Structures are given as C-alpha cells and as structure tokens.
Image 1 (spheres, one colour):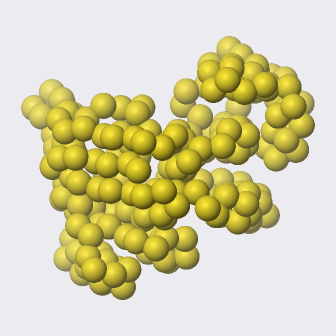
Image 2 (image 1 turned 120 degrees about the vertical axis):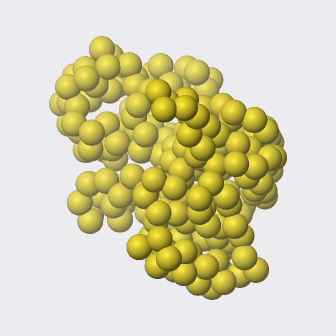
Length: 220
C-alpha cells in the first residue's frame, strides 16, 4: 500500500513561498490503477516525484509498503559521463540485480544501437526516455509511476511500451498522472483531480471526469 498523509509541497522563490499542493491525502492498494488528472502546471509531476522519493514533502508524509518505480521514462538521474550500458549496470547493482542478462533486452527494446556504448550526455531527451523506460522494465516493481512523458517515440514504439507495461504487468499497482482524461479512462479504475493545490476524488470515474471538465472550463 502507498499512502500520502496530509502532504504539502511548497517551493521557495525570490518572491516568497509558492504552494504546489496542500494537505493532500491518497491511498493506493496493491494492484490498483489510480489516475491523477490536472491541467499543465497543476503539480502532477511534483506529486509523482514525491511518491517516488525523488523529492521530499514540505510537510506530511509518504508511506510506501510496496516497491515503487522511479517516474517511467525519467532519465534525469543518469550519469552523463557513463554510457547507456554502464548506467544500466549501475542501476541494476543498486537494486541487487545481475545486469549482464538484462543487456539484450535493453538493447532490443530501447533501439539505441551503437549509442548504448556512448556517454548518455550525448543523447537527445527522447533517447534518454527510451533508455529509462527500457531499464524500468528490467526491474520488477510492485507499483509503477507513470508521467505523461511516457508517450515517447513514434506510434510503434509507444505501442511497444503499452504492451510491456499494461499487458505484461497488468497485475501491478500504477499511479498515472495526465491532463488527458481519455488516457486515464483507458488505464485506470480510479481517478482523482488536482486543482489549485487540492486533490479531489469523486465517487466514480465518470464523476471525477465531469468534475475535471468543469474545473478546466472554469479556468479557461
């Protein structure tokens, strides 16, 4: 289970403290797929980073009783001077996994060819995302965190990502953040809406979608 308990996040700026969200509560059980809807800038990616442990809340706490992935397709933690293969080896060692039998999968899935033997600092953002997604699939987490950045590459590569994640790992918990209600409807059984720093979960998917549509129209 994952729980957010009265979680607040503020950033300090030269103009003072800026609220991202305040006193947010959320509970995700094993095997559940929960979507978090919000407009651009609502704080969705910040919430995913807090759940992953990449950032700390300003107040409140995040409880994780399941193994949790980093945000899928997030390549910000790569060591730029290391090659793609060496980053794979480094990450696998952190999780106590033998990297050598994972290399063929990452080579095939990422489709980076010779660039896997080049420093990651030479990669485009799309190449980093493909490598990050491929490495995410060689470590079996109980809960996957999915930002809308998962839609990298062309339609064929995107379909390959969906199969690897949503079909082969359909029994895992997932937390998906997106501004796209249709994407959440396709993949989630619950949905909450992040608006003006508060998280609202209505009684059903349809009610949450209606609330999101109304709030989006009000803000336009």
